[in-house]
Image (cartoon, rainbow, N blue to C red; front, side):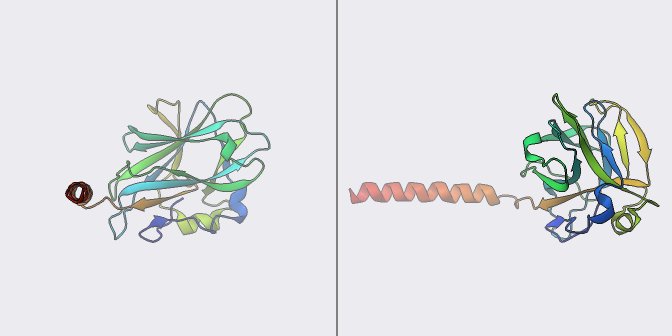
Amino acid sequence: LFVVGTSAGRGMGLAYTGNANTGASTLITTTAPLAQRFQFVAGASDQTVLNSLTLRLLSGAANTQDLVISILDDSNNLLTTKLLGASDIINGITDNYTVDFGDDLNLTDGEFYRIAVNATGTGSNNLRWVGSQTGSTDALINSATFQGADAYGFGYTDTSFDTVQNINTAFDYVFSYTTVAIPEPGTVASFLMALALTGGILRRRNRLQA
């Protein structure tokens, strides 16, 4: 689910509690990733870099599998992948988990993208992605965050992301993201040049004083 927050991020905050804990969660498998289509909003400050992504997850009592989080464009082309380790997931509860993307993933304001999640590794698989469905006990949360039929929950048939399945325009998986702005052109280069010049002046001054 998606909430437009401040220009610094799109936040779930404390809105995602209550019935969303267990009312509409889906088991995450190793073979068929769950997915969410969403529209990226940069905000007034034009912060187009995806800095972090937060998912609401329900873990069983003995999950031992890591979670693979993939970001794709709307044509199912893989843009980047991050890993949330099983050791970082608390078993037996529902909670929000954040993965940092740094400053490498620059998205386009207003364009649609896709989040895909699948488990990886061996052992017990008890991890679920919490969602909200129109008309269910989660309707209150859904009405506050639903992006409409253009953003929806679905799945892929396998981890190649070639084929989608189970499209449900009345269902969203719970997520939020934060953004940062791209440095203005020349900002980094100017800083590095100034740093190099300062170092050169200091070295020259030291030689003259010696």
